[in-house]
Length: 376
Image (cartoon, rainbow, N blue to C red; front, side, top):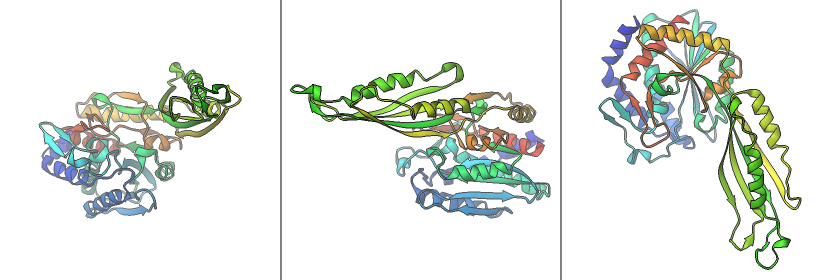
């Protein structure tokens, strides 16, 4: 059955590309509310012939979130996509949508506008079966995933809390692998306030903020623990004015990734307990672990095994990975519901000018998604 579905989708390749191009050419940068809202309006229009209940969650600063609901049963399966990309408006001029051989290029095609095409075909297949009285399928499209879901996370957690499983259509890992665990992510800003002075005449009257910051960064890096998957990266440093002035200010932005909730708690406590070595300087720390880890559980394993069974019917050898990147799946997992991520297409170079997807993975992954939902 799944192979016949895959073949039908292969035969609709032209429509698949047309849909993907339409969605890709509506640019939807995370901070471009107008662009994101135009994209969501286009999705609502494109999907309007399906028997879907559509809810719009309006936001003032970021784009609106959209929820599509199929069916009216008590059992809920939630599927997650996001509307935003990392590409500012105007990127299409230097990175146009194009098809070259078996690959499709364009801003956001891989991460993750392909998912809308997958859902279009999924609803088409479900329509042939008719509305189920046993379950409802919720497709939630958030608008701010790429910037940590400051407004979308609450809706994700609410829908996950109602669900038996959550399926995330983020791109697959290398080779089509699914993501059964994701690290949590944190961002901390460390500011140091010192005292300025002339570097040649009276340096003793100054308190060097850059030196204090350098000392603190060395200490912070020692908190990393490779055995537990905890990594720390200082990604941005600012400070000083001129070479002959003792700097009275310096700052650093620091990225933290953790696999376990206990590590998130440890690092948050450590950052907010920092003390200045030089008593004439003052530290200010802001930030937190803003995205919790998505922990692989026994329920996750069972869900992955089910996906493997469906994949084998398509002749696919499906593997699983743990990744350092985060998604809305992290927030869904906090509720305790089993989450399977990376169900999207196969491709590469997300967030770069070379972003692409393999054309033949759209029907294959859509058939896999249908098989998984059907088995649930």
